[in-house]
Image (cartoon, rainbow, N blue to C red; front, side, top):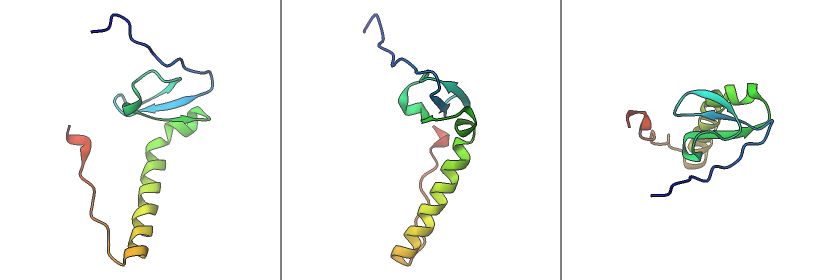
Length: 80
């Protein structure tokens, strides 16, 4: 077990959305697997989940156009 963890230093003006805590943070404070970003502004980070939903819907529509079939729904990972 390491005594000291190396943390990625945050840069002023880089904003992230923490999936674990559901909060916006300046600079990477939580581990990479638990966050989206970086975003240019706090507002962009605050709307990260809306952006994700919109992009997922765009991909579903594109997949349906390419294959001619509706895509399978991905598993729900919120129940971890």
